[in-house]
Amino acid sequence: MSNALHALCDAGAAGATEKIDDISHPRLVIATTILASSVAFIDGSVVNVGLPAIAASFQADAVDLQWVINAYLLPLSALLLLGGAAGDRFGRRRLLIWGVGLFALASLACAVAPSLPLLLAARFLQGVSAAMLMPNSLTILGQTFSGEAKGRAIGIWAASGAAAGALGPVLGGWLIDIGSWHLIFLINVPIALAAMALAWLGIPRDRHDSDEPLDSFGAILATAGLGLTTWSLTEATSHDWAGFTLGALVAGLLLLLVFVWVEGRKGERAMMPLALFGSASFVGLTLLTFLLYGALGGLFVLMPYLLIEAVGYTATQAGAALLPLPLVISLTSPLAGSLAARTGPRIMLTLGPVIVALGFLLALRIGPDTSYWTSVFPAMVVIAIGMAGAVAPLTTAVLMSVDARHTGSASGFNSAVARTGGLVVTALIGSVMAAKGPALISAFAAATVAGAVLCVAAALSALLLIAARPQP
Image (cartoon, rainbow, N blue to C red; front, side, top):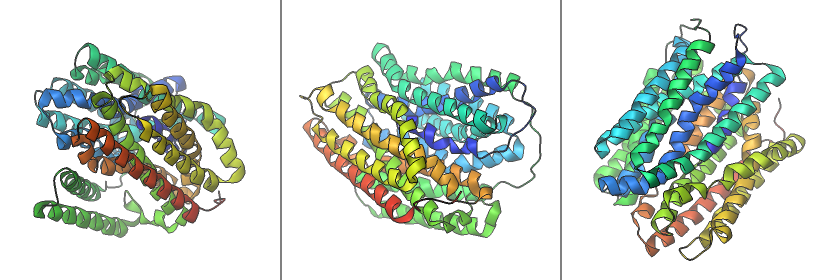
């Protein structure tokens, strides 16, 4: 479900591109980018409601279920920036079509996977293909329009992405209840085929105007570093800190440090230019994004799991239980954006996460004997109000925190950080997913309090580091 919010987080990438003039069917471009991005948003949220069914099918433990989520998030987080650079190098239309096609094939592989290792391999391919299609879909959208038309197009795209991410769990839950978890991965296939056809018909062929080499070595370092770090955290929180696990963590962190060093050496040719971090506001926004989206990512993995395993919801009910989040955000985000425009982003980006923390604490009331309307619903509404106050000004604040030549890199990096937050927190919740019955409810309560602490830390990042009124 947090993918419904990623749509708003990602939107800045479309706003940071230059217009091209040879698009003859702009509405077709909007439809293409919506369909292409929707496969990633749907898949990122629909799998959460399928975790109990996948566990039963493969006799999977908590570590296995964590990797069902993180096998997708790992390559998406590490390769998102490289995917955008590859579009510049090889052509955005070509990368979009390849990415969507690979996503369709990977989804079919997930649907027919006879074993957990093959399912995880297919999920990894889904993450790789999402890293190809997402940034290029947004760049194509941003290049097609200018002025007010661009704002409207981005708004339509973001709203559609949020709707796809929100409706995915409900549709996925229904498919699980009437058939099998295998069916949830087939949702993407017709959407992907339609997106490929529209891209072929409505988007002009690429012009090769960039011969810059790709930062492939940086991408390998980032993927290996995040992979080792994620694996070690997953093992440690589900089992213990064995010597090999600790060694993997150290190795992963060292690889990430080498990645930072390599990026510094590459300068402006790096996929993560270190010049971005010369702005205190950008550092604060990065911390806020990591902490806030990390807390949300953990909650929306655990919430459907808790509702199905400990409270007795069906998969459809668990998916529908979270619908107030996107609905309330869609209604309140315009007001939050207007307030942020008048007061500056810091106030809204400080108050928003605090309100989200209060929503997390309301989730402590969820139990097997509580009503949805008095437990889950109030928590979702309060979290949604807080997130509306945060996501509406976040993209604008990111773009205003750096100079004009870094806006594309800053927006893409912020989107990658949002996924990385979910990746890391998902690696830390193994002990919760391993619990059963009343122990699961107690473990969920502890995780919810930890999530509230992360939200408060996100608010402090905004208060202490973000400029009250960044210079445009």
